Length: 541
Image (cartoon, rainbow, N blue to C red; front, side):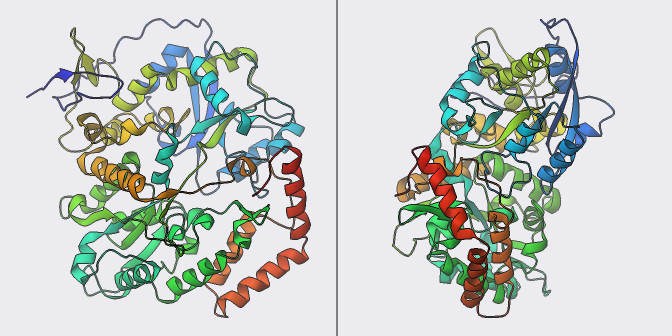
């Protein structure tokens, strides 16, 4: 039976499951734009759009509303920067493309903003953004991070956390609680207990099938290995960026505390606790291992949307044989060596939209209008709850009526199946939301499912009540680093992996790596970057 409750937009309350959806496409008001424009957009995981023979209703709705024709170009997580670099060399960059030239402003980023500017391949945002109030507010809040040295802004930041206190959810762990029960393991309180648990997951047949086919621990994204685990080993080394040390900024790999990270990961690898193939797997491989029931501990984001994605993959592999809620929970962060429990903190945005210099003023205005809509309240409703008249209604009393049958899964999963284009529209302008998105109310339970919503909320509240948020050198890390042919964060991470899987003494190998970096001029490079920061009034403690 259809149920109706008062609808409050700000709190997103009153959302309940209903009956079957209507199948007709809602009427679309006549566009205010006379000329149809082709707009090519390169974004992650939109292969379904790129290969589509028929556009879904949401895609059609957006195109007709703005009188545009969207040409989707799929980017893979494993090589998106490299692919965009190839496009830039051949002068074939899309009109709009996702990149991380600022939020991952390391000297190893293949796609460098200064290179794109030198070759006149990208254009700046207009100086007057008053026609786009939501864009103007976002740019204003982040201006210190996104303004280039010529005082122009060439990117639009994709905000991850509209509330900064949500960034603790960016580093978390999902664990097989049924495996813990089977093996009689309690929640680990320190790194030694974590190693023992994950080694047991790998070696002691926790699924009871008599086969050596289980994996202990891995990260869903290889480049963020340790983002959660390092909080209990060397907290300020939980991301591979630059940190403050003795009055200067240095790569986190060089801090004395990182040696313990090296020792720990060698131990994880040698005991079998760490996936022996961790260094060859790509983004999402570990998620699929977890969903297939082969991985015991998955480092992953703990937002409701992220956990809902894991549950969706879990259900695809497990069916009804093993409910997600019966098998999975999260682990709480254990204390660091100084007995303080730290939680992750992150820059408010990760990745940016950039715009080709081939985009003229008319097309730029249309693109900005689309972006402004997507981060407006109306756009939020479309990309979170579907299409009015097709997926939901609001009656004359302001009551929300869901028209979809969500009994078989979350609204988020159902809408993604109905509208493949949702993958681009829900994330093109922003990743994040507010703490309201974590609240275990009926709205979020409808969107993400009851268990993912509750799990994310419990983790967030525990972090708020029990942890200290890390202080980051965000302003320095957002600075564009000078390009270097002899040094990069990426090369340091590769060397770190070499030490993890090596056979010689881990610390000796690590010191040898560091010595070689300094022989290549790392000391001079660090000094130059610090001088550049000091000239901008940025000083390390």
